[in-house]
Length: 68
Image 1 (cartoon, one colour):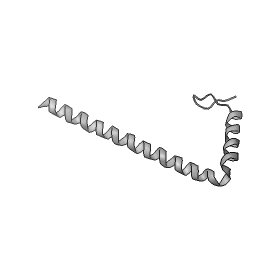
Image 2: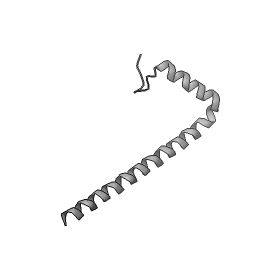
Image 3: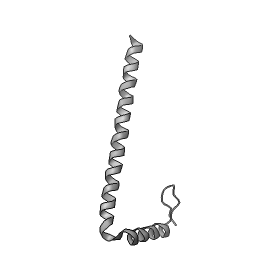
Image 4: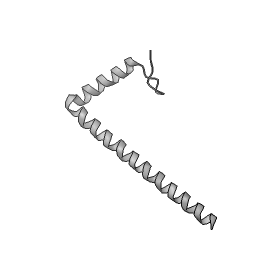
């Protein structure tokens, strides 16, 4: 069967995991969990983007100092 990216999970494993999550948390809690997960991922991406911007500014500043 098909696999999910590098995890090597097939459709049967994904369905089993989804059923276990549904049984553990119930149908009402899953949207709240996904919302929290989405906010966490967005926060992480914003942090990485800020670090990259700081690194780019630092590199530009170093190049300007070398040229002088």
